[in-house]
Length: 108
Image (tube, rainbow, N blue to C red; front, side, top):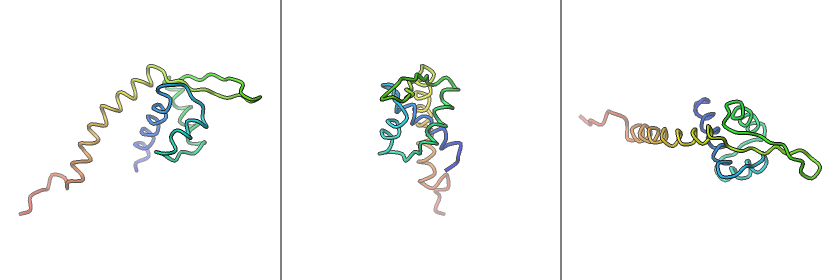
């Protein structure tokens, strides 16, 4: 898969994982596991990128003697999910075109 496409898809998946309630790294990985195998290092790279893009905010809380970062989606992050859903319609159309054999359906 194209690395840029995959990167964009993973960004949206992480945003979707925290869309309805804030969460922390381990829980995000656990929630995504049935759908996507994501390493901690990849997740934290994505989280930093999304934070830099103002698509999520971070707060730090002490939990069992350790600091835990909680991530919350912002309005910009919610807008990105909405954009993705619209873009996905076009991606599905392209997929259908490719899987039916493109524009060369003449069997002459």
